[in-house]
Image (cartoon, rainbow, N blue to C red; front, top):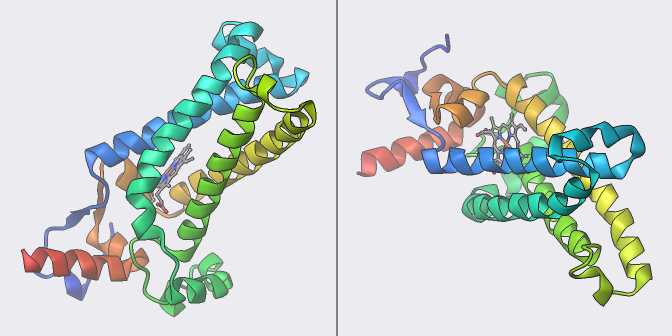
Length: 219
Ligand code: HEM
């Protein structure tokens, strides 16, 4: 159980971190990521061709993969558009990133107070944006039979190499993202139930908790 803090007096025990719409949007991205990722891995290497069975065989995997990718991109853009404002890096985030050894050792009392997201989450957010844009651009360049014939073959080849690199980076980022979500106790509750305890917010996102309280008392 998370301990109660002096700032808790007179407040409900839990606060809203994500609305139902935000959570639905996030989990649609995760579904899009799994579909695009698994179908992409099946196409990437013969050792992964057993994954074709999930999508109705090789030809269907080839047809469906770009549509899964576009679906993931569209739901990601909706979410990122909404979250962009909370992910602007400031001086406090740069300080937080400089103290990454304190982060890894769990010495949170030494870190600057964190807003809605910490420096690491914000860097990850912008890396995800870059990967998504790069995957869309390179995916369109190699999309047969619709767009690829419009590009010189050298560009299509370069596009396919970059697409594979970006997909590998995205998969690594999401493994790290999901690992951190389980590592920081209480974070999964934020994306599943939409609520966090005040203790969780006080420990990990104290400046955000102060903002939430300021907004509540202004109402
Ligand atoms: C696959 C399993 C996944 C798990 C377990 C997971 C878990 C979570 C959790 C718990 C949060 C809330 C963190 C917080 O509020 O402090 C979150 C936020 C977020 N997730 Fe995921 N997620 C997954 C997949 C994805 C994917 C595939 C993407 C995008 C490609 C994504 C993008 C985001 C973004 C952008 C945020 C908001 C953080 C920010 O704006 O900086 N997640 N996720």
